[in-house]
Length: 108
View 1 (tube, one colour):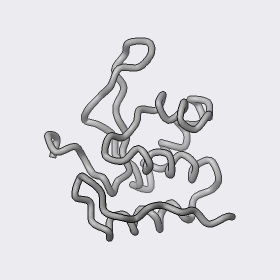
View 2 (cartoon, rainbow, N blue to C red):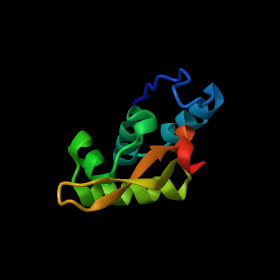
View 3 (cartoon, rainbow, N blue to C red):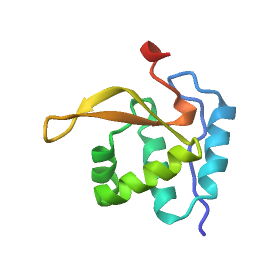
View 4 (spheres, rainbow, N blue to C red):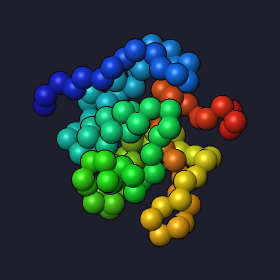
């Protein structure tokens, strides 16, 4: 499997370099689609993304995104909510973030 490159510089939400390195070590051992979703959510930074947004970013079907998100949440690589954003249909969907970015400040 090819090595992935993530920018491990600490970012705006005050995440430590150690947090980013831990996320990298988890993502490094994931399979192709899971890794693709993990890298996409990491690149969204502290703003995170909904499942629908991840589908648009990666070009993967929403069913694939949901399965990979479930997998990544089970290994505690992603956190969900508590904030929500509207989808194309007008419903409000939970925002996902890479664990190294943590919860938004107002939710902490």
